[in-house]
Length: 597
Image (cartoon, rainbow, N blue to C red; front, side):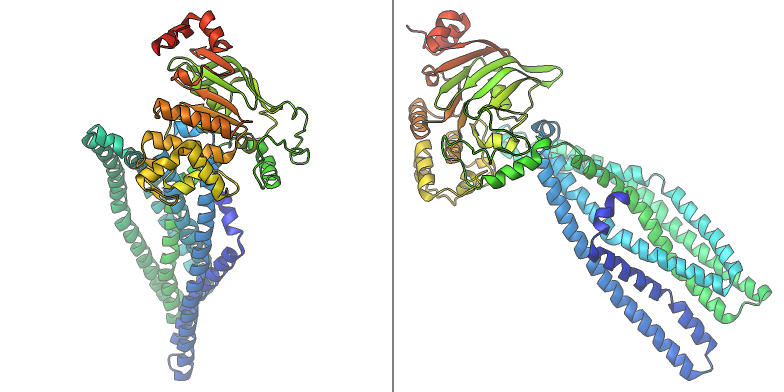
């Protein structure tokens, strides 16, 4: 565990802080010597005053050094913790979508906040104090050996018994500490997810049900805390009793040494003071052992999260270089230069072959859930294709594969002649925009949502054009909203149609080479839908459109329609071809009154 924290203790300010703390501890260890000298020089008032003055100066200087050491370590810990927390958060953002599917957001946020806070307490307070106290304790032990070595042997034997007994008492501490952290994470997950879904809870009159769930989780945490309280209740008096008995044993020992060994009164005073001071290092060692058990679980969790491979981890360096090379968004239809695309072995071969192509792609979310089987499709800039099928056929899964939100189980896919294995994820997604049926709106202002993911702030004219194309400007005027108007959580103060139009405006600002509309107009009426789609085609003439829609009136004019069922491609072609070839397709048309010749 200590080796895993060496990154923190390699900082210059931390090393200086630890060194100053050690010096302060060593200076504190000299106090019994000044007292001893004062006892020896009791009859000499001048010497007595000198030793008392030196002792006071040493004590004052030690206090100042402890203050400086505390500040250096605390400030360094705060900076390190902020860096670690940001690093962990960025890492979590870059993890595959499958990780977020498997872990509740409240649990993940608890690790980012609570677990790292536990680490801060350990690295900034417990460990430095234990280090300085331990070194000071070693000095005290050496001084006792100089004053009377038989007392040292007795001290070592009794100290070993004291530490051993305390360790035995603490054997269950780590188990309860880990259970506490898990219970806190579970409670955080319940609270976070409940607050995020507060509208659904109220709409379904589920306040009591969700409250009962939170109460049960809270009682689970209470149960663990009570177990920990009972353990602490046993440990605290036993610890105080053991330490008191240990000091009493030292006092009795030195008295016996005075009677039978001729130990001087001055040495007795110094040894007793050292024995009393040793209680503090022993407590610090005890705190260290306790904190290690508490911190180990948090550190293990944080490190385990940091070791999870990110999306497209092999292309991380290439992504950074490409993002620097492309400081400005590509103009519509403009190819990347050879220099911009020759990063980490990426070649310009095939860039003249513009298009998006899936070849025999299959997708499995799990071993029990196969979403797609041997899907092949092609989309060229300027084309409009559609994917249709019944609910659950796998239409949205195709969009997820295209955007590389989930890796294909088999098959291959290429973008502008470059395979997904060769093109960095950042570059791949910069050419594709997706407008989905999900809210897709973040807490913040309209402007912040429009700028989401853009590397360059668009002009005022571009923003106005995007708002007009998506018909969102009309909604803003109706609701008296401006670009700096704040939206509620996930944009819940907007209607479903307004959220979709906001997403469409965002997609227009990205000027994508390929635009995927996944039920993107499901919340719009037919007239508005027709108006928005026509405006999109006019504004992005060189963009390839892939439309996924239950409303077949939006796709019958597509260049190609891909008809799928149960994750399999049944056929592709024009609307007329599919209607004449596949009865299932005719049934879909008939359900919407579109089967007329």
